[in-house]
Length: 51
Image 1 (cartoon, one colour):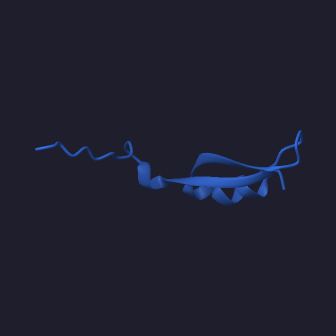
Image 2 (tube, one colour):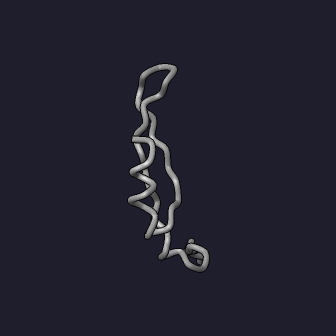
């Protein structure tokens, strides 16, 4: 039988959120998506910067 591998987050994984932001590229003008891992209590601050 095949072994099933389960990926888990490291300790404290539930305290972090993956934030995906759409940013316009200065070179081409096209939109680019950036992904960052941010603590749950800092998400609003992170999204508020660079508006």
